[in-house]
Image 1: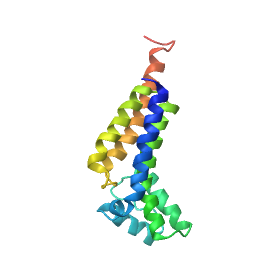
Image 2: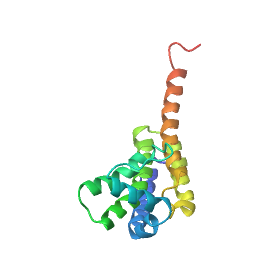
Image 3: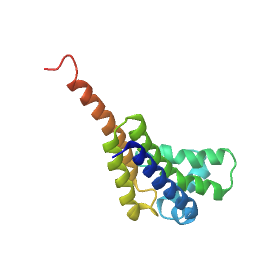
Length: 155
């Protein structure tokens, strides 16, 4: 597939997801863990990392910065709702543009589209977040194995 087509497909897919995460921010942030974490983020004015889930630092940075800027609760909830889509979009574009791995970018994009039916309103799910970091690691692993296989010291 053409890299430009995949890029446009990614922009459209994550654009729609971002649009709907703004429209349905209340449904996403008032559900389960997200509201709990948002409460403690605002109460303590610090990250709310529990059970060593440090992958949440990226997504919790958005509402935390909003709190530091003195934004309204609605704006902070919108920021928190959109932070997950931003993570997934940045991961996709990092794979496609940064690592230049079209195959993994297509796989990751299809994963994001397919899992949305199960996790859109449960934004705090660690599965899509973990998969995002896993794909970054996988791209780095592919680069290292390609480098080693073409190395001068190949056995």
